[in-house]
Amino acid sequence: MPLNPQAAQQMLTALLRPFHAALANPPAAQEQLLASLLSGYAQTQYGREHHAHNVATVADYHRAFPIQTYDDYKPLLDRVMAGETSLLLSEEPIGWAITRGTTKGTSKFIPMTPTDLDQRSSAGRAMLNYVLQTGQVDLFEGVNLNLNFPSAVGTVTAGGREVAYGYSSGIYARHVAKTTPIRSVPSQEEIDALGGTTEMSAWTRRFELALEKCRDQNVTLVGGVLPTALEFGRYLRKNHGRYPKELWQPRIMTLGSTPGINTYHREALQALYGPVDIREIYGATEGMFGQQIDENKAWVPNYDLFFFEVLTPGGIKMLHEMRPGETGKLVVSTLILPRYQIGDLIRAFEPPYYRCIGRDLWWTPLNYGWREFMTFNLGRL
Image: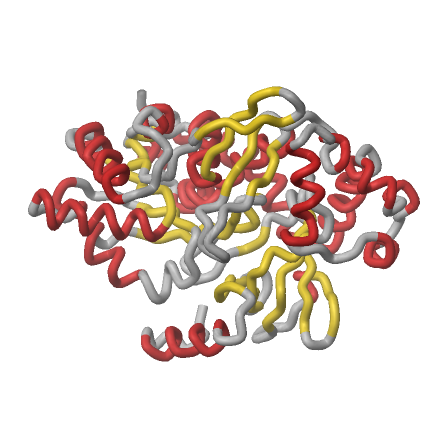
């Protein structure tokens, strides 16, 4: 049914109010969030061991809690999976998210709690903010071409019971669909029904399902991860002789998982999907950390949901304290993982804009600089 534009604008304003308020005052938002996180940490064994209940300031937090990588946390996560849930969690886990194993060839397992899972709906902020800014409420009358990974792959035994696990992009999509007024086609449940493997034959089945379900639909949004969106467009051209832009006229693509979505990959995306607006989402299995909110080719942080620090050559500092042009290693505190060094390099622009330029590897800045030169972007927003 057509949405009332005024009612839709009021709804979007209310949904995005915490995000916009935090963005307007990052220091205050981060201090308030840290207090909330510490309250949760104090309910866990790890938090009690690090005296979370005595932490009153950011400086206290730095002294009490060490920066940890996934390898540091993995023994604790293994114990959580074995049943010691209170070691890191203030709630019982209701599922586990896995990575695609792109960093070291093996998947990371990250537990999800009810509160943590509610945060996954922040993956819809890029699209919601786009509609609020442009006034294109009728975008909701179309459908989202859903090209995500399966949200249900299998089960693991945790504390003597079976708990489901799946890929984070599919989990985000499933929960965003419940909290935003646009229908995803195919549904995440239909994607999950095809199985959780990732070989090309499995993707062929998913691509054929997407084509079948969306062939006669008004596709206004394309959401998912960048590599899959590119592969789907090439698949249609190779196997059906049509580009996506010949079947649909999407208005916006909200994509994540790869640096340079709106710079290095923009030309390829628009060649396949037409003159569509592109909004980058920055996140990982551990959470959705930020999203692009306007035409500037960078994302802004979710200061109301995650506590952000960076390791720079000059030492540790808050993300919002970075100077334009400065690069650092992201350290994020989530509901589950305090001071987690996620393994990404972040580059700061004029506030409030940032880019993830890639993984924390010595050649990443060189690769980023080369791509900026090849696209004639040269560090511009």
